[in-house]
Length: 422
Image (cartoon, rainbow, N blue to C red; front, side, top):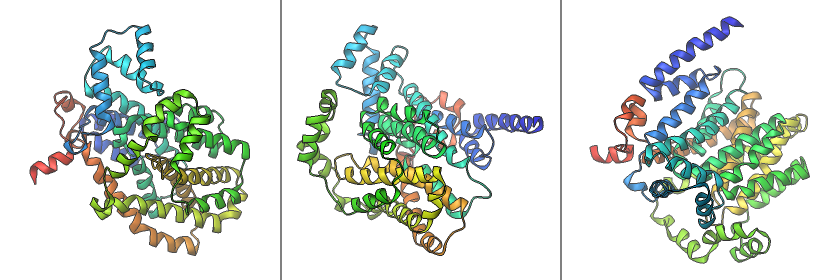
């Protein structure tokens, strides 16, 4: 036991040294040595470093992160007491407590974008790294090729460059960080953690309500599966009816905060912002390819693995909630910005699918579907990585924390870097 602990301490020390020299290589080493307790912390540290060296591409200047930084820098110039901070929060019509507290507190000490995005990286990175290792720590034996491919997709569904939209995507990882241990391991504190995602982004009242609904209904695998299948054929929610429900039943602060998202002007602008016909085919299809692949896996799991799930309570719980939540996400996907809920469903589903295919021998149907799904998964991986070039700086990939200290504010995105040399 002591020898194992000493070995872990030794390899952990070397990993830290490697991180100081070249963080990206240290992350690669962490995944290779994922069974060591220090490995997930290397990924966590890398995401904080990525945040510190974060670059806003000229092609991504309209991202939410630009607005976060501007608000934070404006706050730095204001003198604020506790009372004025509360007034500022009230007048802002914000209901996301966490991001407002971070901006106000941090602006008392700095107006540096690098500092703000590093703190974002620390918070986002903690939950992200823990969600990755939740799955990795439960793999038994050598990882199968399809498991590796699915894990890469799992990594890229809500990737580290989604720091661009810190509030929603951090809330997504907070929710998953609480939901997975509750569903799969029966840890009831996961309910509280999942519910706290509402403090990070108000829109997580939807996933939390679905979780509460699941807790009341229990495991109803067949019913949830039928509901999930039905939602595949419902293409659009009536926005007028949706608005009536919100205005009749939602608290006033939620109505006020969501009015901009539900208005006809926003809807029209959202739908016309990037017409599908102007997008490259791979931009249109890469998310669809992943979605169809994931849904195909879920259907096979239900048809071929129902007896296994019926005899294993923790597996049944995760599968049941995944189907229920995926169905709700499918319904919401037609609303402006509602498609974001699908990413959470995909992560829950991929966690289940990976654990299942790694644990069990593949049936013939599953084996054949893997061959069909592999090109679609590869398409998703390639395009998803391409999107990361807009905020991943050359310093994040090739540099280290020491170099980054001397380049603060001068980071160039890989996307812009490629444009410069081509």
